[in-house]
Image 1: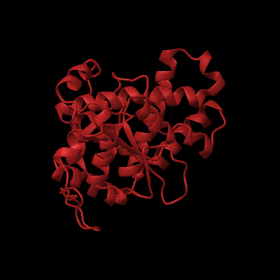
Image 2: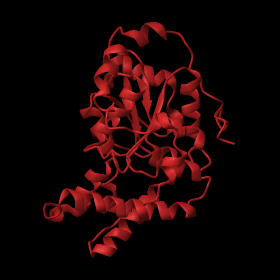
Image 3: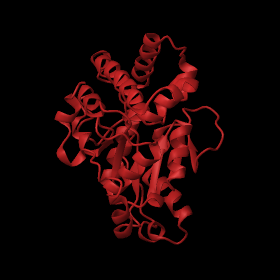
Length: 279
């Protein structure tokens, strides 16, 4: 199994088994800290095609039907959740260890495909949003439901963002995307109600909502049902003010509405990024 991502990742970004219990302490000491959760794959890194091809290769090896519509059902899932959906009616015949091996096989194919990913497969708008949040003192976490997250950032020359990762590892397999998001929130010191997930996948939005978090759906410009607290056409439409507004609605008269009233959004001019890795 490739281990390059673990070598790049700084120690404080590595997920440990104690991450989930730590959530209770984090919630107790910081109930008003806003945190932005921006999944690495899909919005920041244009890596969806790699994930699709990895699952497609596994399906061919097993002789299972698989297409792009089936892949859409796997987005916004952890490795084990995706394995269950991938196997469908066959899942009951697979032991838990066998499903883990299936996930690792898929991740091997993904890792092998990284060398063919263009180094500019990055969303400039997502980098701008990260930079704006950092300038405004809002923590950002990059949840990733696979072990090659740091290797992906390395491929894209974004190793400076590795410290924001909260990812699966061979030894840490959260049972649900909700669990992964809650662990990321605990690491940031934010309570779930003060976290905003930005995503395109309905499954990811539902996982955040089950965890008690706020959500923003990026529609890509098309029409979409209101599955989140707010729909936006692109990441470029998201401002720090919008993030605070969403949390304020869930907590009337709370911290954000008092502290940040009248404070303008801090966002780099469109087309330019304040992040040092966005050269």
